Image (cartoon, rainbow, N blue to C red):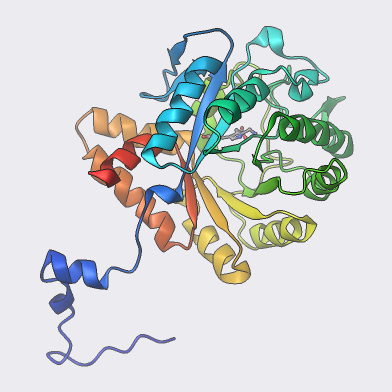
Length: 332
Ligand code: PBG
């Protein structure tokens, strides 16, 4: 549809910007608390809230504190929380067996949240990086990140999370064939209503730096993730990945990182019309927080502006570390 604009002065486009009432009337997009998924970091111990230095305002919580956070999120109306485990070097192995341990930090947190706060949806992260001695999302054999053996490991991890009570499985690994394998395993195990939100278009991004600190992967990671995560220069490939994952049984899809990839969000929504999410990742969070803390930008306004941008680009929801702050701002 080509926009038609009458010649001046028939058209004075400022007319519809003249007051808050009129601006509200013509406003096209809205951000609501229902659009938010809150990523949280869980670690060992009890009664612990440990700051993540590269993500001011974000903490790693022990399971009991994660449950408190989930209750707070539910009270604020946030529909979903996403669990990421922090693991120390001593918890990491070459075979990544911790990933499918029913007693790992993530699975304990899932069970505890579902028991205490059943109303909030729990999303997970499926990738081996937080259990891997070398920080990669896949198994490493002779220096190669091997695909098919990794998919088998990811399926075991998925089933352990579903068993723990996860509502939404979040594969962030970028291996080929994993969505189909996970979907088949979930069906076979009777987890018919467990959803998959695929990190389908995930780029090899420097914006993940602070996250890797948060989960303890920075020190572990050898090399980069470019043989599995996408080249930031590519756009068409994102559509092929999204189509492939939807065909394999993903219920929802994600573009990641967020703000630098809004063109991808728009193409994905326009092409497939599937539930589409973006992840405002750790580096995006850190940049906004750093500038706000220095008084260089108005943090609250920048956060809200950054999130409405996702809605404008066609996203149905956003994973953001700002979720609780935003919920409070929106309620005001
Ligand atoms: C792990 C994973 C990463 C993020 C989410 N899941 C890091 C990576 O791929 O290296 C990044 C999230 C963020 O930066 O906030 N596979």
